[in-house]
Amino acid sequence: MKSKKQSYDRVAKFFDFLRKGDMRRWNIHQKSLFENLSGEVLYIGIGTGLETVNFPTDLKITAIDISAAMLKQSKTRAKSYPGKINLCLMDAESSAFRDHSFDSVVTVCVLCSVKHPVACLEEIKRVLKPEGKLVMYEHVLSKNPLYAIALKTMSNLTEFLEGTYLDRDTVSNAEKAGFKIFSHKNVYLDIVKALIAKPI
Image (cartoon, one colour):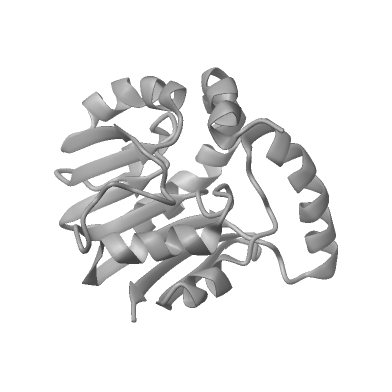
């Protein structure tokens, strides 16, 4: 099986096409969620930079991704952002940042992609300031049995194409990693969620 890096490198040129429909539906919800970002921001999994148009202006953002091909695709959007985005090639599960470096951390469809979601969330907690916010826009497993079966089936395809799993329990994983969810909104059924959490 190909590594996550290889999977994302492989789809980088086609990623915008694959996410085109999602972005049309998600833009308004992301803009509302991202209004909660402030201070020094860590953006995990920038991909090709599609979500940068939904960020508030004038933020200072450190954006990481495991894929060099994705980062290459994101450069133009990063330069166009009306603020500052610094791009870094880095694994979200073992970053090089010091403890308590960031005021805000944002993930978009990352916790459904990393191999070890709880370990990734623990790493996020390490680099997030004690009073900081974790802002998440994530695919999760539905509690509806019919939807859950469909999502588990679809995960076989999305894992191959994008390295993405559609059957993660991100709320529970965040709590296991030491976060408290204080804002929880279902964007699409209970399959796509906008979440805000704080370390406890």
